Image (cartoon, rainbow, N blue to C red; front, side):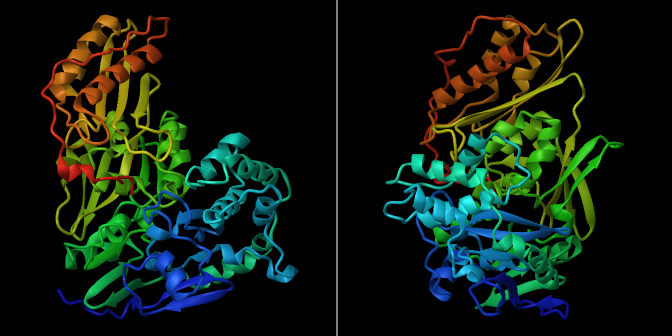
Length: 518
């Protein structure tokens, strides 16, 4: 379909970089910020390593207005699409030297020198940018070690070793961290306010299009006109289609500037926390974990800081992956979705959104607007667990979640159990639930529920885990939930052999699905 040029449309990407407003009106619609920096701007301090958002060599920092506040976040430039910078500030390693002080090194740079935090130096610019971003997270009250670990989890260093890097980070966080960016905050906010998008951005080349709408109505109008468009929020999944699969995407619609999709609201009257579909994990973590603290360990393990700063809960849901980390927990607490198009909106249970592998209940011209998180009752007990080959930045082999309410006499009044990695979609364990409803919450009930899991799931084998391992892991996670919620001392009774199931075949269509948390 040919694009209709509208009078309310901009055609130039505008962002602040190096003290100036950059304006780009002719570019590949899906060019990455990394390619722009290295190939167009000649700024080669930002390195290319994995090109999939894992190694952190390409880390840059992006400043964005949140109301009147300026927030700085580390992002992976290799999967950050250039038009998504529209209305924001870009900071690269070349920008850290203080021009007003004879180009003095930034403290993050100087301490890496002082503590011998670099050898080959390839990873160093990305590490420096992660440390720089860490200095701007002034509201983080986590312990020092945790803050450093979280900041560096997305930066791979193969030769230096992390001990000198950590020493540099410890000193950095314990000294005066003010820099030229702090001194320029007021002027930066003022300049960003001047270039804030007020109209839809449209970048095009060779009949390929990239749209950046600013409100829900404009988004739905575009989706009505381009029903086959690829919707992008954090690009932590779709970015790999471009960099790894070399896919050509004819039409892309970026959701990150849609005001309604970036809102977080608490509606105590209705009993819901509303999280917009374009809210990042980093922004959603505090309000979500205030009501459901058990989400925090899961979210800390979801990607790294660079991924959480870009990826969204809405994207994790909308791409329908069977191994997405968030859907099992959200299903277990009874979350719902609001889906919108030009004709209005509808509301469905999250568990009903997933129809089959690669198929979701999303009609042409429709988008996920927000997620409705029911506020917990005092009686509800909630846990979510993730099994993966490594702690950080790894994909789930099995993700499990349990939401339960017990009666005063210790019987299971209500329970919702959901797993990821066990079926073609995130899926509730109905047989397992029925084996528990009305029974005393004891080991005998759990044993029966573990047996019932073989009725709910027939998992496959792939490179993440075998079918046997997945069923065994699912059974043992239920046992863990029981041990954590039964209130007494119990013998640990983990299964060592799963119930007999047909050996799953490796599904080639899913083997390459290596990033699911956009």
